[in-house]
Amino acid sequence: MVGWECPTKPREASGLDPEAVHHAGHHGSSTSSTEPFMQAVDPEFGIISSAFDSQFGHPHDVVLDRFDEMGLTTYWTGVHGDILVTTDGETIDVSPAAEESTDPAVLSGLRPDDTAMGSATPQVGAATLTPVSTPVTG
Image (cartoon, rainbow, N blue to C red; front, side, top):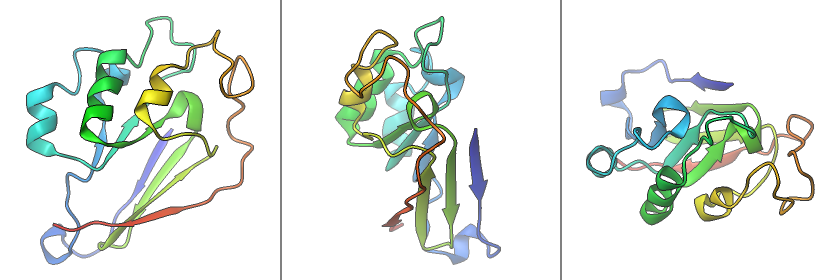
């Protein structure tokens, strides 16, 4: 699950870049988050909602490779569990249920048979939430 909490003041009145967080379409499939779109939006964070053991192989490596090339801090529900994104209009806080790597290159290497994070299936949802606060400039 991905949750969003937004400021009460209009986006135009805040210093927040409305494109700072990109929620990848279709579970991070190869047909989502195309290069021209991503270049136009130019987000700082990428969020992918898919199961760790997706029968379709989501997220696809091409999407994670693109996120890596763009330097996006990346969250994947299959590894990070529930992800809550909040903002006060000036900063964005991302709170995943599990603290794991947000490097798309590391995430790209993970699959159900991969034990790089210590288990065949990541244990999500039991970690203490540690918000990540990042100032966003427009």
